[in-house]
Length: 490
Ligand code: NDP
Image (cartoon, rainbow, N blue to C red; front, side, top):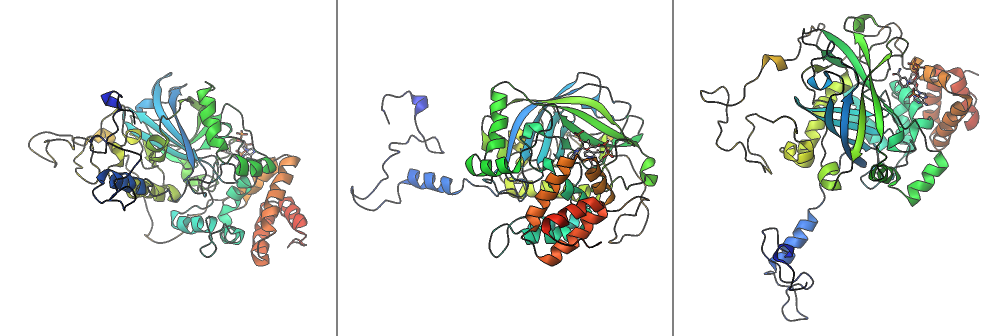
């Protein structure tokens, strides 16, 4: 350290105390042991020892960017959410893209769904859309989620990924067929985060000023065009440039090539839900476009990189439970479980005051409540303001405006599956997707699946093959042929 530096360049401890030497620890004589009184050394090592926070149990590897959402049509007749009122209205936002199963340091170019989480800093609080790049999910009930993720992560004995576990779970969960078909299609490895769509998958309720409701699903369609990564290129990049997607997003924004997405909703009249041919709340199903076409509502632009990865991306915390007035939940059982689990994991990962971290705090509104104290309370903790409600003094009160619309439920409290709608089954929509694929896409899909199944135990493969056949006979036959197995039908 040079002695002639200006005072604001002075290296200090966490307590602001000037440090005299950052190269040599204090020892008893030049060759002697280190002294406990070197409190700066101890602080430096102790801080380093605590640098890692718990990794997200899923979606651990990600990249983020700031930008804005701009409305291109007025949907105030459907929802009272103010950020959607009027044309040309801009709302700042933060987005985090991610893989699902890999750890924080894992490669980007793997076959995996991609997370597509958007936090909009609206004037009525932060609205999170915690989406994926696929319109459906592997399971329809959150009670299966921990088992599903265990099967996709590491074998408890070997600590390696285990295709038997992966396919054992799928073959015991036929509702996964639709998502498995998307995952193993050419879209299973996107070329970049910029070249993929985002889908809410879940159904949400929009409620207008007159308390009238409709059901909606969101679609964020990439303006860069869908582009996928061939498997051999992806495997090479996973070894050579494992952060390929992370760098692609960062570099594009630095170059001023700001990626954009056109945002649409499908709108279902409220009463259609009970009689529609598919259960509209089942997240393993889409609403076919012929039944419910896309309505454009806006544009999402990403135009600013985070300045610090840990502060803004690693500490970003999204929850499907964060909805603003005018947006409400549907009875989708996966969504209901997620509304609890996301905030819960953030309390564990970041602490109960995680909303004080700037990327998570409301920007265009204030958080006003009677929550106090807790670990790492770094704001003014509401100073001397009254900390209970109701009270005789002052402080925020609940407003009727923000109440959710009441809805009717009937039936017995019980552990039961969804009520079936006329065309519900686990295979029809997987088959519909297969049938709209080109010849080339069909053979890529079959090869991707067969390559995985080659090392999987016979009884699991046979169970799974039945599902491919049920989705489409040609789909099953192609995979059986590649595996050299007589198809169950034959
Ligand atoms: P449509 O022909 O109206 O829609 C087909 C959709 O399939 C398009 O949105 C297209 O997305 C998407 N698509 C094309 N290739 C793939 C692929 N390899 N993996 C995933 N999606 C792909 O038909 P339907 O609405 O009846 O849907 C038929 C099937 O399309 C569904 O079973 C579902 O698997 C899939 N799909 C449907 C969506 C929906 O909301 N209805 C959304 C996404 C997929 P794009 O236009 O961006 O190319």
